[in-house]
Amino acid sequence: MRSTWVWLAGAALGCLTAFSASAGTLDQVKARGQLVCGANPGLAGFGLPDDQGVWKGLDVDECRALAAAIFNDPSKVKFLPINAKDRPTILAGGEIDVLIRNTTWTMSRELGGMFFTGVNFYDGQGFMVRRKLGVDSALKLDGASVCVQQGTTTELNLADYFRANGMKLEAVVFATDEEATKAYDSGRCDAYTTDASGLYSERLKMSAPDDHIVLPEIISKEPLGPAVRKDDIPWFEIVQWTHFALVTAEELGVTKANVDAMLKSPNPNVRRLLGVEGDFGKSMGLGNDWAYRIIKAEGNYGEIFERNVGMDSPIKIKRGLNALWSKGGLQYAPPIR
Image 1 (cartoon, one colour):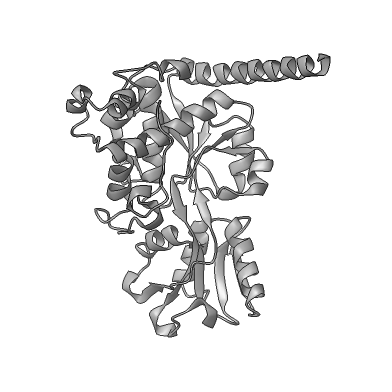
Image 2 (cartoon, helix red, strand yellow):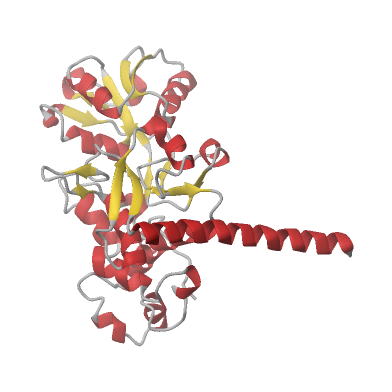
C-alpha cells in the first residue's frame, strides 16, 4: 500500500512540475506579447519572407494560428530563421517557444529532447534530376553525384538508400539547403535530394524550372510537424490542439468565411469547437473561443494547405496523404468532447 501511495505522490508531483513549467512558458509568451516561432527562412510554401519581408507558408500559418489562439491576433509572432542543424540546440536553449519548420519526427530527435506535437505535413524524400540526364527512376542513379544538406535525416536516408540497393554514391554535402540547391542548379551534381515537398518548391527557384523532373520514388517516411521542449506538457497540448482545431474545422466544414455564421450551428461538435459550449479553451489557459480565433484568422487546415502548397499555389502539390482521413488521407484529429 505504501509503495502505491509513493507512486501516486510522485505522479502528482510530476504533474505539478509539468504544470508549473507550462504556466511559465505560456505566461512568458503573454508577458512578452509575442510568440517566438522557429521557422525555415527559405522554403517556398512552408516558410519564406516575400519581397516586403512578410512571412508566408504552411508552417508560418500554423505559427500564426497559435498566436491567434493566445492573443486573438495572428500578427503577434516573431519568426526566427533557423538552420536545420541548429534546430535542437535553439529549441532546447529557449530562444524559441515552438519549432514549426518542416522538421521530421524521428525517434532520435524525440529522445534527444524535441517533443513533437503531431504531423502537419506527411512527406517523403525524393530526387530531382535534369530531364536531359534521361533518368526516370532513382534506381538508375548508380554512381551519381547527389547534392544534399549536411546534418539532416535527408543525408542519412540518401546513404541508406544507395547502400540498400547496392549502388555507388558520391554525396556532395552543404551546410545549408540553399547552398545545396544552388550547387545542383549550377551543374555541380547529377541529382538533388530532399523531402518531396521541398523538391517541388525548390524547382521553382531553378534557372530553368522546366528542365528538371522529380523522380517517382519516395525513399523514406518524413512526418513533418511542430516540436516543443519536453518539460512543458500543457504548452505541448496548446500547440497540439491548435493543429487539431484546424483539421477539425475542415472536417466540420467550418471556414474562415463562414465561421461567424457557424456560431449559430446546432451541431454540438461545431459548438464545442467554436467555444459556444464547454470550457475546453479555459482548461488550456486560453479563451473558450480559442479555435474560433484560429479559424477566423487563418481558416481551416485545407484552406491553409491549398493557398500555400496546394493547387491554388504555384507549387501545386496534391493533398495525397495530407487529405482528411475521410477522404483517403492521414489527417485526423481526436474529438473535442
